[in-house]
Image (cartoon, rainbow, N blue to C red):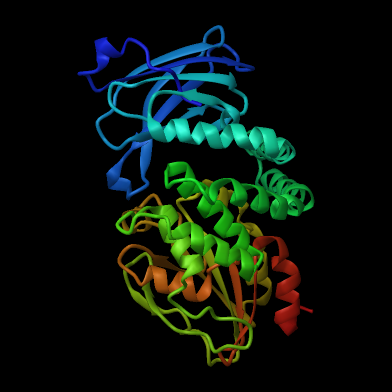
Length: 386
């Protein structure tokens, strides 16, 4: 999807990367930006590096890129696109419908990008129905940026969730079968890595042991010394280090710190006859923050504060959590960051999509759920709310 090399002789000894775009369905003056690696934000951290505007469907960047071999392109109000593989001095051509950056084509001479484009062309041929539905889902998601109230954002999230559940989820077995057959005999590449992560997540969420074994075969192709966020996620799902706590198990305690850097046991409120609701919050993820039922949680606390306690476990970098700009909750919020047993706690409590855990006064786990089922599960597991 990236661009053909042009004027290579003129820029081969330079680190300036050129991005030339010819896109449709984006109004003149619309800002468009390049994001590049930013190691200070972690191994997959990034920041906006250059901004320009679209005019007559065209744009051009000339950007010196010395860190990392990837970037991504974003278009205001239309979101960001997939990761682009690049090398210093390389020219990339961007074409397609700019109102859906994930469907843009990026063309260049980087071998990883060429391989990625082969994958994408195959999907367009064999999984056109899935790609079309994914595009529709993204368009629902984009409405979040036009919402002015939390209620409107919540309604959009519910619409997106319902659409995915009714339309995309039924196609997951088909997606897995087709893409597994396509990649199983291919060599390792960035595209192979990303697709293996996607297939592993599908098998993991569906608890399909046969498909999990197939993903282990794919993972065996990864270089032994290769590390990335995808590798971490794949290993976490295929080879869990920790026993996942489930309903009926005794909750496991850990000590974390609050906004004042004071230590707290996450189960310290138990033993007083009150129930406990554990919530995980991904503060660095805009989608997670917008999706959060904060006002609803406030209503529950106001109504049942004598019956249960709530603790939010905040997944965020240490500096972010202790920033004065951080708006603390009305209840106890603890930091799960790079200085804590992050991997163990996530692997024990939150290995899938659950964001809420219901715990009895005796410390028994009563159930888990995502935000969509939170109210029903609250009434189910906390008898005072029935």
